[in-house]
Length: 165
Image 1 (cartoon, rainbow, N blue to C red):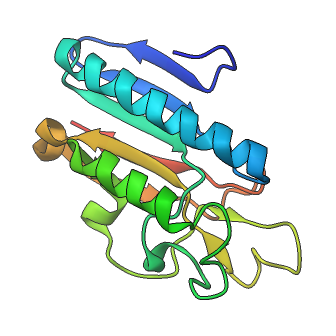
Image 2: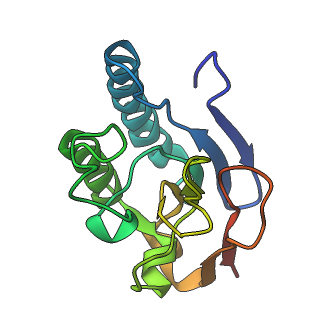
């Protein structure tokens, strides 16, 4: 789908699993690139769904979907990753036929998948939930659980998991 290796796909019997890494929007040039990539990705998925309806798109979306997904929504409202335009894109992407598997099973706040290395953010659980396992709507009944594994400390992110029967 791209030349940076930001989207890798593995096809199995009746499911295609992707690992996605959306660009971050750390500055204006990168933010423009991020929005372009998001548009290209949406077009790619829209076409792919016709061929492969059972999709699981896992990865770092670099976007918090809702206020519950970030420790400080007020102070971060003008920061890339929580901009209204980014959140609207993710919302529309989900509405195009995908389930946020973690929120399907867990509605509780303070569940994050990324923490800054600064100011003891992880120890204080001041994080962002920017990693998702988005599952095609038609796989809803095959999901058995979805969790975040914050105790695994290999980077500034932690693993997330979805189980499909």
